[in-house]
Image 1: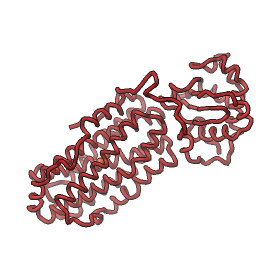
Image 2 (image 1 turned 120 degrees about the horizontal axis):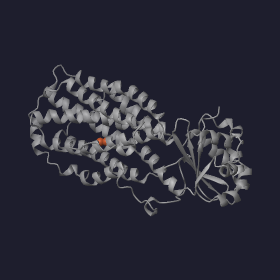
Image 3 (image 1 turned 45 degrees about the horizontal axis):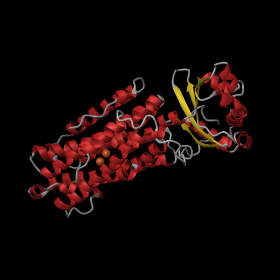
Image 4 (image 1 turned 180 degrees about the vertical axis):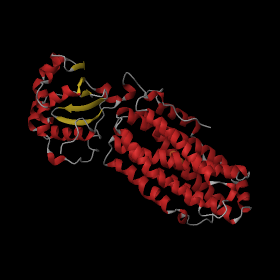
Length: 441
Ligand SMILES: [Fe+2]
Ligand SMILES: [Fe+2]
């Protein structure tokens, strides 16, 4: 079975075919320029494919990143029908340019004409009849998206850093608001308040803390594959923000482990018995599986599944709802000012993380609307687990401490969830730049 034309799997197969084609290697010995192929589909969507072709080998083949567009020496644009004619050998690419069926929007026609044999050998290498069936089903995408060398740097290009982009706005915000030290928080009043709590109040705070601290540990451990994927795609602005993201998750672990558990409840012992079946399903299995899948499959669909799991469900539904309720329980009873201070700062960090997730999913959908069903399917799969986690917290108590109600928890969760879902869905037909970060308290 041959992969869908112009899909990431197809690009990967092409890359493999180019690198294992002796005729191409010989014909392209003097070709050293990256090219970008732009395909306009029948439904007006466009796909841009970046091929770094260098002295007979294909060093990088992938859906083009913004940096790739700047880096490409040649850009060829045509309709999907025209590209099909080229790939099936019915239209010679140089002839297609001469007849204006293919538009050369960047690069020298003279250079292309001089290398017409290279172009023919390239088409021969990647045209359908020559695609090796043995390569399907899709092998790992990682090799395609892992350039071994840099060919350009954003900071020395004409464009430089895009400070107006969502990730850079979040980066600047993180520098202002994300630098706080859990060790500076004074827990002395919190310690005194803890002594005055009854058994079920203590149990609920330990339960929530045991869920939060392991959740923060999990998101710290599981974020790296996404950062590596973004870095491999050359998205400097996003990676800059993601450095703050990972540091902040580590800081949240620090807050609970070295703050609450050390100063307020040092005798808490093993808290893993608070990890209910639904909690284990999400944090022990679903989250790490979706994130580490990116190590072998960094396709847009895999990125979408990872981001829905991490940003929309774990952070957007559970963390945000949980911290909101945790803060409310303490504030209404005027308890634990140190913990409340930390939770406020932590919530502010989390709102940037969620804003990045909304941006990432919107970007993926804007590039390919077919990602929407992937997002929807993953959300539908995980939302019941998230709601079950909340249910399991409440079912542990005959009378819920601190006057918390299930309706309050679940309403916050559902309101935030549907608001973000609507924003992401709009990316199917709206410009990405219209997405701005979440409001921060
Ligand atoms: Fe966090
Ligand atoms: Fe987070």
